[in-house]
Image (cartoon, rainbow, N blue to C red; front, side):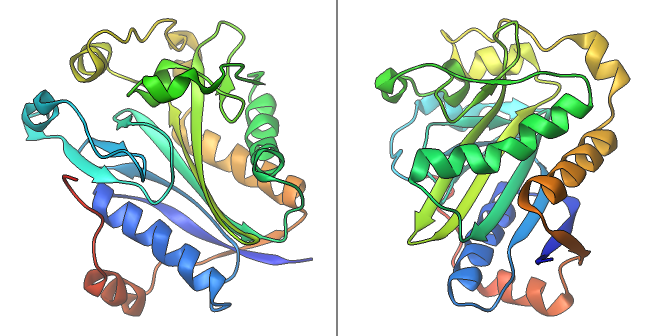
Length: 247
């Protein structure tokens, strides 16, 4: 059975997380790193921009959350802006999947669907067309690469970077979004329908990570080696060029 690396969850800035995802992707391309799964949270709260997204509203530079300015960082993947507050992010770096980009999205998203199903939550793919490119907010619409709840709430928005057969796919799972902050960021973009509070009270982040890890084992038919980042890897990351903080 193939062995993937599972990096234990940790909290860090958007710059650290995006640098790490891009570095793991490059290392896998070079054949120096196994397929990897990791989950993480953002501190401070941040807005991540898609790789080709160069412009954003000026007022984003003045936003704060809990007394700290919101970071603005660019992702190595495409898509639109994502507010990272009250969310859990997953990242999958792998290779050897068959099919085109959309087929690979569905192969990877299957572990998200199965994991949430084990927690009692049914998810389905979004149906929006290419009109999303006119919306600066990733969560303002749900495409066929995104997963929504039966009430229409977009729970998971994903983005992908693909080079040959090597794939980085990461996505934001909205667990406890602050409505006021969301509206301050995206203004005209409503956040309704809201994720049910009753479900939030029943399912912890630890339960979510455990369920998704188990479903990843089954869906990818792999086993995991739990391995935190080493001191040497942290040292390498500290010396890498960082993503643009304000493109």
